[in-house]
Image 1 (spheres, rainbow, N blue to C red):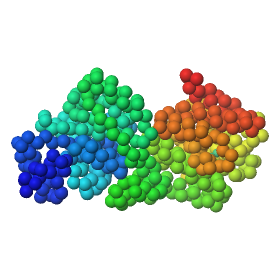
Image 2: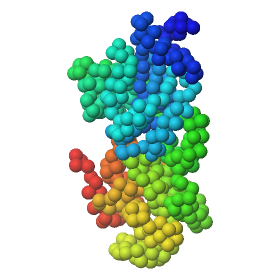
Image 3: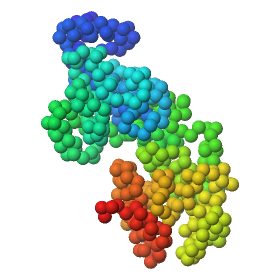
Image 4: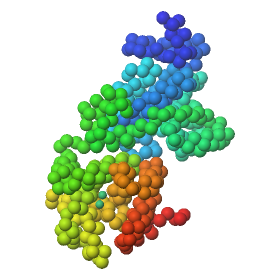
Length: 443
Ligand SMILES: [Fe+2]
Ligand SMILES: [Fe+2]
């Protein structure tokens, strides 16, 4: 028996497949050490909020490429480089990781960072593993290519690079040259060893999954079914059934279905999706982003006189342009309807609804998100004669990939300006002021 497993180790298969064997594992490990075998362990760090096939395919690729005996999935208690806390608590994130790794003999979940509590620093985790495995063990730390580029801002980067190898996994389309140049420079500077591995499945992302679950869209085939079952069972990433926000959202949807055109309803749902996704990416409140998006055009199909009346009631002042084109005030009108009709009175939501049409200087993050989402609604790409597709792709890139909301707001304002002037219409002075406010300094 021991002889068999002795043979199995160098081929990179640990062979731990049930409790009895796991109990023996520590003993076996010491025997292998005596035999001169050097264990190879990979650490898969992350928030795992939730764990998905991107993580698992990356881990399996590393296991195979580097002949790793086991990959430990280690959910962070609190990641130092992301916004505070995950959206699911650490215990749920650990449980999902345990469920996902259960059927791979070489994958193991680890509570080490959750038990340690506080901020989860990679260097502390790797040191603990080094103590456990001894000085000879080969340790690989798997992380995203974006994270590797920031490695020098991590806690004790030199110590970290000296105690383990890094495997930078990238999603498709990643600018490989940047990373390779960085790796080369880092290799020379500190002796750190960073490997590079392209993993197609990394196009799957946890924030996309959270947005899908929140919006009631299918997240099947993005992660093991048993993880999805767990998410549904515990209501993770969804609006709580008995919450006021959920009741408000249902009231708005009921109103929209009965009172606005199918086209506008489809647009509203498209904006809701973009808003939720942007809020996920930028760490803003997704419930508020969702409610603001549902509300944003609820008054747009009312008669002009009614829009003006509601807007003025809410404090809007008519000027030359809005008096002639009351539809410009449909955001103000919607914000006026929201508290009485749908019980939504959160000033952050109402401000976003108000400013979504014209924009303004000094918008909050939520206002920016709705303003951009309104233009990004993917349904618009399918519109006949659409000449703005490339510009929307640029806005999408700025907002989602480069995570620069201000630059995305500027491009959105510029697109609206060109569209308005192209029709021979006038730009609202407030939109002009906003355009100047958000104009990037370098332009
Ligand atoms: Fe609108
Ligand atoms: Fe809209």
